[in-house]
Image 1 (spheres, rainbow, N blue to C red):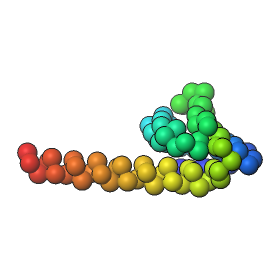
Image 2: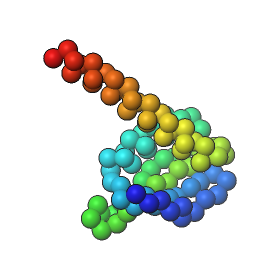
Image 3: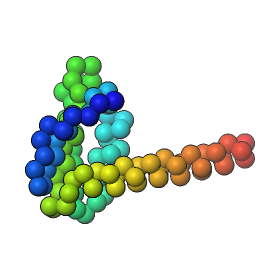
Length: 93
């Protein structure tokens, strides 16, 4: 995975995330939209085989880097929680 910041202002950030697809971007977008400081979170991918996804985040003025890092922490936490629940369910089988 490679990440390239294409544009960053006080309110917006555009970044290309090479080597990723809808799987990561959909979840990240959803978590970002749960944050009241995020006005817009979306991504665009022209075609999965030909282009890299571009993530776009617009905030109320809150630093986008901070908001994205917090969203990623939530994502990791949710994955850890699912892993624990899944492991317990497997033990019960």
